[in-house]
Image (cartoon, rainbow, N blue to C red; front, side, top):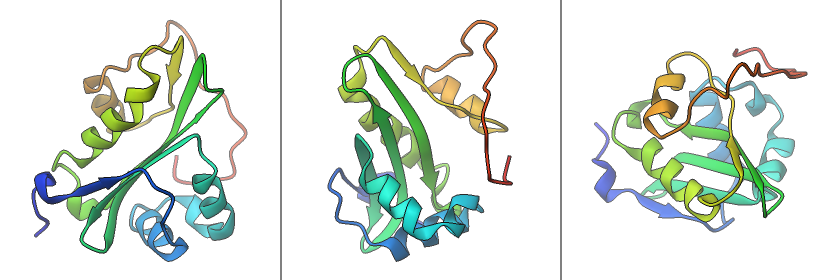
Length: 140
């Protein structure tokens, strides 16, 4: 059984190996795990990257892509299934959002049960907008 989130260590460094990332994404059935080199490069080149660790195990991460002034997009928030419900996702979101708290626009795309989670974190549907994309994954 996983430990409470109080024992989780949060880091914002880029010292994270590709195998740990792929294991986390595969555990959540994210299709981007099938592009390990690109996923690793994308995360390391994010504007912000926050990771959650239980000892040597990567148990969660979130990233942000931003112009650095007005707009930020939060594309990934992933927590190992066995560690979900312990507050790790909420901590990752709070830590990610802090540097962007005064930005004009903070956005993400969500579906399924994650919508309720993000609403609890302060996100809401933007009027009548619809998410549009060209997407090569299969988990949505």
